[in-house]
Amino acid sequence: MKRALIIGAAGFVGGYLARHLKIAYGMDVAVTKLPHEVLEIEDATVYDLDILKQEEITSLLFKIRPDYIFHLAAQSSVGLSWKKPGLTVDINIKGSINVMDAARELYYKPKVLLIGSGEEYGHIKEGETPITEDNMIRPGNIYAATKVCQNMIGNIYAKAYDMDIMMVRAFNHIGPTQAPMFVVADFCRQVAEIEKGLREPVMYVGNLSAKRDFTDVRDVVRAYALLIQKGSAGETYNVGSGHAVSIREILDMIISLSDKEIKVEVDPNKLRPVDVPIIEADTKKLKAATGWEQTISLRQTIEETLNYWREMC
Ligand code: A2R
Image (cartoon, rainbow, N blue to C red; front, side, top):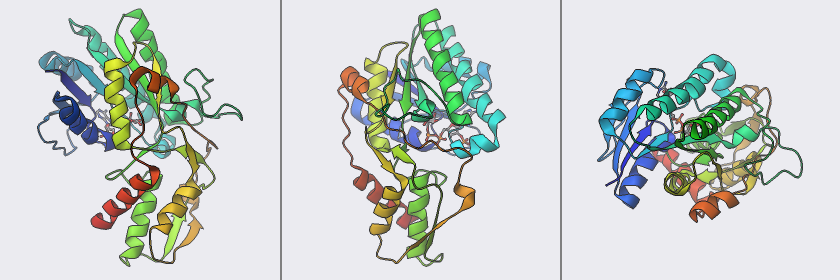
């Protein structure tokens, strides 16, 4: 039985990935969380781990001896990266190096998947979308810059130390349980609160013209599981739907799923210092390496996310 370790599993993606590895592949799954986080995943062993403490990672790896290491731990909010750039650099760059160094100390070669972001491409020019993995990188925010750095160092480690490290650039992923600091969850929560009469019928929004490539988190974790098994060392793979939609289209879809009359107002706090106009993945490399296909439509994931927030509010 293959052993998988998911580092940073208390976030949005970890639980989905752990369940998928168990159900689809029957893997033995261990996961980590920060000491202050609460996390229970059925049939997975949970360990406390701060990736800023390298010796903790080393002793955990020697104890578990995973075949597969999924490195999800990150400061993953673009908004927060503007407010806490130093912390974002520490966790997303130094933390990732700590994970790679600990993996390098093992007496065998585990496969390591580093999770990067479609944000790494940054200021994409006309004609560059859908964007391929070898496109010019022009990161437009602090979070993106840290993920670019993680990607470059992952590539260097794979080559210099002959390690089985692969990188993904994940485009926006959405679905039930995502925190409301991300746009789809934010909008769905606002609609659910309006429906319950918990707030006035006004949606507060940021930049609606930005276009992003949204994929259901369950399709994303399927891609991660395939890539760690079938991907090539030192390579980077886009993970996304291949179709960008504007935040306005998302907003209209969410509002259309409610029978309330809802007004829309811009909240200056939701506008970011720099926003990238369009980010859309070219997924040929992922599909060629793994045979992955999207299985959950945008409408389905939005409906399920809205229903999740209707239950939560
Ligand atoms: O910041 P928190 O308290 O939400 O904890 C996050 C955790 N984390 C850490 N884990 C270990 N050591 C650290 N020093 C550390 N700092 C933060 O990583 C959180 O529980 C987890 C990441 O989860 P999310 O922020 O929900 O990200 P998500 O959506 O699961 O995405 C995973 C990966 C990230 O690399 C994103 O940048 C990428 O997918 O899109």
